[in-house]
Image 1 (tube, one colour):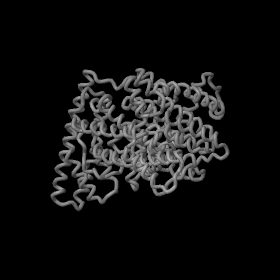
Image 2 (cartoon, helix red, strand yellow):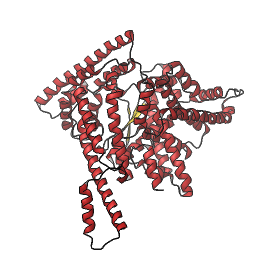
Image 3 (cartoon, one colour):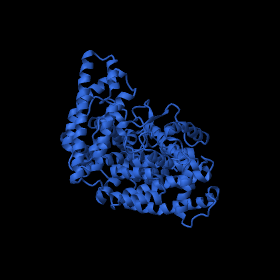
Image 4 (cartoon, helix red, strand yellow):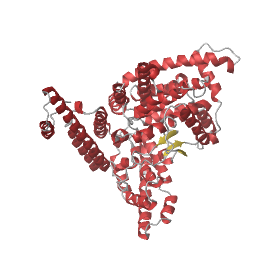
Length: 596
């Protein structure tokens, strides 16, 4: 993108050259001028980036809160037409300002930031004008998360945080009024999710909160106002839930919008969210090929292990034999009441292995706290990580694990067989160490706020999947064939996530077809398959991020390893890769290969 540079920049550069006592050659003068211009361009871009972030937080105060920037904690934005108009104006302004930069003059690191800002703006505009989930997805509207972040984190004195909650509570009724006005022809699935998650809001805006306020040093007037606003907020949430429950009945009787977004929107969302350099269809076709390769590796391991677990002859049907062996192994699992405790117990073992094998340096000052998944964002995933933003260096990183208390005996047994003795270890590698936890800690240390704030989902999920493979390749589990079989089963799930998501959203795959893919082709338990079907009806594209990112990272590592030969150092590769923040892998690849 060639642009005319600012006359002032050129004048300053020329002035500096003319002031030199020696007279360099015309070629040297030209090189000095180019260097001066590029330096000025990059300095201008750094100032632009900071200005962009500062103004972005004014448009998205709740996102700022989650990122650890607390200047606007007291502000709960109202999601009405006026706010969308303001966001679009902000986008137009900064899209215009971006065109002033010559991308050829930017350093590689600044060029990545440029592309991330460019993508963020275009994606946000597309979301408002084209995707329009603010109309058809009622689960977009839930105030609980922001309040929980303020109440539960100790980034400021309690009274200060309670005053932010007090101010934020004022807009809750208007927030839900706007939400009801926005909703038009929603999907049934997202309506039901919104009911579930907003019911969970009362675990945050609770009696315990009222007691905390009563015991605080707030003035009597503040306490009285707090109780009034809290009561009004609860009424607004209950009103929204009732609104959704009535809407749910209408949708069940009269029909609802399909949760399937179709090929055009899917490809567009894939391009913005994944940024892989290939189309969604191309990734889908690659996944189909890799599925067969993994199944062949599983067949080899089944041949090796069969006589250890069975006295009968192995079935001629390879997939049937794999299924039978997996079923045999899967009965080895933790008791349902010990599920969360077992997760907590395994983490020190993973930390020890990573340290002993010098895979990546873990920050001892950033502990990982295992907790039960908060009710206000339950209903989608059984395990997840919540990390503090780049501004909140001292905040806790939480490993959210959903206990199995609410499941029937049959459902819990199916779930535990899916997350059996071996798979639970792989899950903890993925979600915690050295997966999401390690990556997010490094992302928050990135010198670029842009890379930390506007992270690429495929890089984030891809790293966690890459971490699983890396750990096993380095000897975690002592190359136990049972662990490798279960790893391949898990990896097959990653691959089938892409196949599943694309097939459901674009090709119209039915639930029956999806269940067949997951249980017979990917060897998943019924409970896991049911949960994945639900997730695929509530999200789009995100399920492809695991496979897209994994393949890109793994292929990059192998390419650099082949170039460096015996000089290759895995720890150095991992830490250099993570040092760029949560940027798309294709951009990290450019930076790393330029330095080789």
